[in-house]
Structure formats: structure tokens, C-alpha cells
Image (cartoon, rainbow, N blue to C red; front, side, top):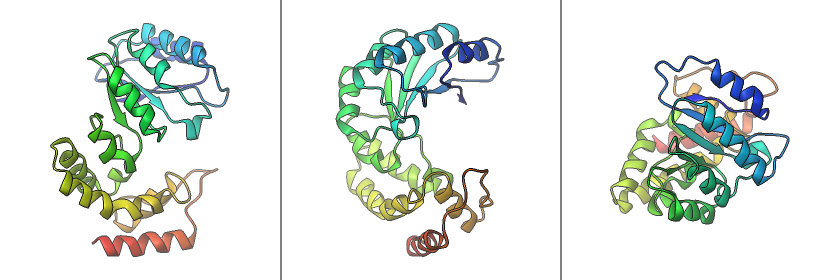
Length: 217
């Protein structure tokens, strides 16, 4: 899955039309950022993307980063536009919005949580999983949580959800990906290096993450 999004619709369409999609299963396309389009603007944007893209499309709604929330009605309108639009990574954090999409989506369209901390409750109401941050560091635990949720083992899923709760809070304490990079370096998985304007988390947060990792081990 390749990330292909932007806030210049014509430019994005041109990029899609000039891309070799050999070996690409789908694209993940974020809502336009910064220029804060209306709901109609969002619909028209993704209509053009769907017309241009030769592979399935997963929408990505993340208002905390883009400055605009794509509401449930707009998501459903886009989903009904084409069966090429197969899912949404929904990171609004609004479970009522999740529920409206899940309840009214066409059969070909699924919701995927974009918030690690909502994996369990989102699956309970019908999402198919999560596109995760913490899985970069703790893939086994996050996978266990997701599969337990999907198979109805709510006791195990709840235990894992509670075990991971504090770490999830800490890795987002100073934004993403600073927190998870700190955690991954402690685990020997990656270097704690970011490109400006992002910087590593503070010594205080780093220490808290280290203490929580010891507790979880």
C-alpha cells in the first residue's frame, strides 16, 4: 500500500496517472491538508482520485493533522461512488462517527481504526482492525489485541488493551513519531533520529517510556 495524497487535486491526479502501479495493491489517500476544503470539496477531490487511480483506494481521515474532518456522510458518499474505494483509515477518534460509517457502508467498504487506543472498541462495533503506530515497536502485542478483538475474545482483548494503555499515552505525549522512535531505539529496532522540524522527545518523556517498557516486560 502506497501513500498518495495531497491538497492539490490536479497535481495528485497527475502523479497517479504517471505512476507505475506494478506490485501496488492499494493506495492510502489522506484528506487534503491545510487548505481546509468543504465537505463538497472533499467529495470532488476523491471523485477525481477514484477516476484516475487504477488500484483500490483506502481513504485516510486524520483531522488532528490535516485541519479538516471528513464527516460520515461524505465518507459514505465517496464509498458509494465507486467499489474501487474499499476502506477508510478513520483517525477522528470519534466512535459515533465510526458507528455511522459502519452502519451505513456498502458491502465492499470497510472501516479500519487509525487510532491504536480505539482498536478494541472499534472492532467491537464493526471495524476490521487498525493501521497502527505502536505495532512498529510492539507488533506481537498489538496483533494479539487485534485478533482477540476480532475473534470475540473480549477478556484477553481487554487485558491487552489495559496493559498497553499507558504506553500508548506516552508514545503520543509529544507527538508521533517521536515517541515510538524513542521506544524502538530502546528495543534495538531503529535509531531515534527524526528530520526537522521534528525532534526527539524530551528526556522526561524518554525516561517515562523506558520505565513503562520495563514494567511491560
